[in-house]
Image (tube, rainbow, N blue to C red; front, side, top):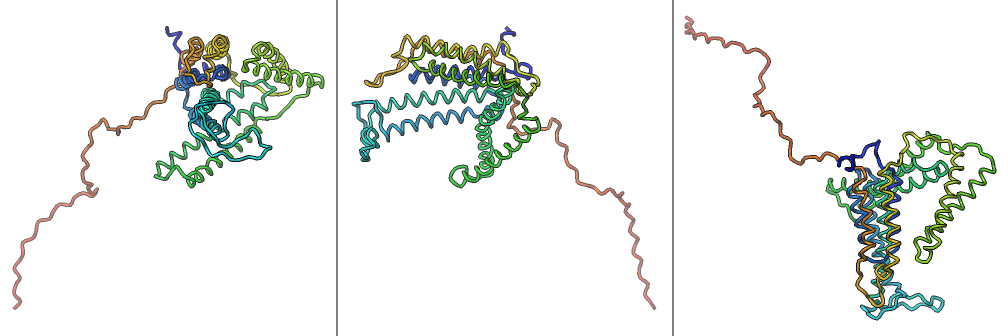
Length: 406
């Protein structure tokens, strides 16, 4: 039983960051195959549970809440667009009618205002929930994977592009951490944290910190010899470019085929061929980059289990969802109550495996709120005495009678 229990995370048994990204992308593929709000809520719940169980106290781990808020904002924005710009979904259940703005003849097909139906709002809600679930899955990967270790794991041919991507990925978590820190400081000082004035006073230090961080990153990259390349023959360079570009295009086309309902037949073979070509191009392109790796991250058994759980979720949802298309995409015209499909829901629950097998982050000691009491009793404070020795009191001389002066 002790071997099956997840150990405490350390530098030697830390999970590979690529495993977290494969797990999150598997959940995202499952979310992209459905508009059922119950199934999308289950995907978001699985991602949130794993993040809560295996998130560390690092700055990038605090960005999950920001992605959740961004997803809610996307849902609200999608509904607002449907209210203002209308929707092509026909409906008979009219809720209310907005004032319609007349548009010229060249803007046919576009309307602003008009009637608002329940069918179009439900369709906009389903579409917004789907986009929000995709954003939350990406936020889960950002909160669990260390971006610096992810950069170190990239192949040599993608190192320069990977630096730009990792810097862009860490910008949002660091920005959120700076905003939370400054708002907490203002709240402790009794200053307001809302309003235009507070936004300006918080925004300037955040931008200043981002600029200082960019300068520090540029200095560290220059000190480590970033951008050095080796001489390779022209034929090898051209072959590398063709394989890498063709492989990436094949991966994009295969991914689109897997995500689209019509391309399930050609998506997987094209994806496998693109991955093979891209891997060959990256191996050849790695000869141009002179870089070494200190203590590289290795794929252990737990990393394979985490990555495999995400891939299993994607494959099982695609296979089981094709048998119940009505449950995966609830009807809007006419309105139907969504029902939870059993086998796709069970497939999504496979994504909970990282909460059991991934190493447990070290727990920080809680600070007690009670005042500290000394074990020794307080000693009474004696009045401060002078260091000079006391002089003995001299006996008073008896008063002698004054003789009268004759």
